[in-house]
Length: 204
Image (tube, rainbow, N blue to C red; front, top):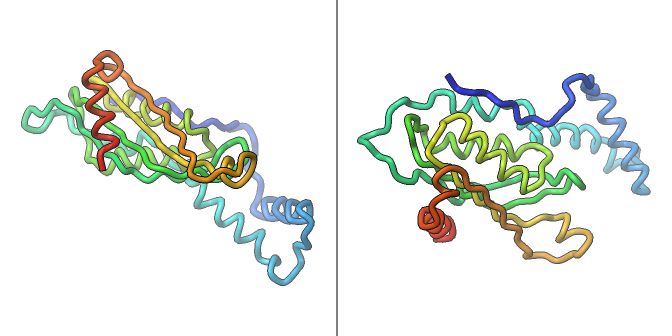
């Protein structure tokens, strides 16, 4: 039985605004920016923004643990070394400014009694990314979800991403990358194992 630990950081007691209220909020922001929301080119913008938000933040309507529920209870052919995906595309939004950050993730685990299809690791990563996030929080959530669901001997996650809140505002410097990682179990305890993971993660 998988231990399920909700990761969604939201107040379930708050009633969700209607679509009409959401579109009205977008019109308010357009006016605040100095534009006329009734201008021909902007009349449909509130509806488009609301529809886009459904896609951007679909992770709030997905349970990351569900991708790992059908984990097999045996290790194929006795395999017990690193299982890893790298180059997983990350697309998320900074919770401080609701501005995108984008990059790649490397995710690995050491199987214990459970293993999953490789695409499931990418789906967990994408579900958690499709929420308002910090990169640090996203890194931790991915590792903790896999650790809770699979109970592996170890988990390792590395994310390298560029934040538009740095390139489009503030410093206005493009090309700056932020790197975060989290190591659990044997990856945290074994320096050589951690070095192997980092080597694989950074090898094209």
